[in-house]
Image (cartoon, rainbow, N blue to C red; front, side, top):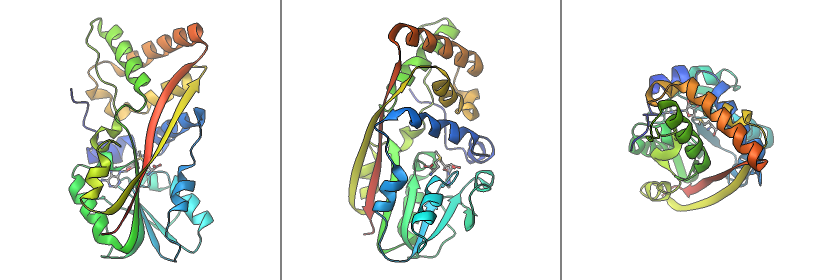
Length: 267
Ligand SMILES: C[S@@+](CC[C@H](N)C(=O)[O-])C[C@H]1O[C@@H](n2cnc3c(N)ncnc32)[C@H](O)[C@@H]1O
């Protein structure tokens, strides 16, 4: 069964990421994850040692841009995103750009980041060709995404809440952003364009003792509310109620996370 299309540029730029609100709600759920993984720290560990340009494609609210600029002032970090709105909080240099048509010269970047964004790209081959084109010989590509079974407890929660709302056994799918470029498929895709592809798996468990952080996460998919096949806000309310009951019964709700970072080099 296929979920909603999460690659529409209009929806991404004008709704899902028109500002950082929804992204920040999703990012904040990881505050309850153990172990905590310092993704910008891992990226910093794998950046080239020499001075150069780093392009952060799909930089969002600048989590990586800000940290790299602070810790590696010798590098020029350019944030790029399809949404002009989300770039307003990221300091210059930034550019509104589509991953499939990067406004950058051939062989200009010592590193290209594509963190939790390739699953939003309509034409993955076009985007990966662009990353390969702008990357210097010896340059590095760092990408990230989640596995297909990431946060599977949220699939159950959303599915059962939606089935309750619809009054049927049919369980509409939760929106899963990463399915178009999952950690399961990403290494082979990346090997078509880059060398030395390595996966750093970052498993963890989120534990909450109140529903709100989880409901805020589910609510962050509001941009795709029209295509989930069930009234969105009513389903959120039902999920909140179910979560409350589960936490009352078990003392906590656990969510298994399977994210990862992919490290590659130019061919
Ligand atoms: C899930 S957010 C990730 C943000 C950031 N990289 C991070 O990991 O915190 C995805 C970002 O990719 C951007 N995006 C989606 N499709 C894009 C495309 N084709 N080209 C450039 N940016 C895109 C979105 O606007 C959004 O800011």
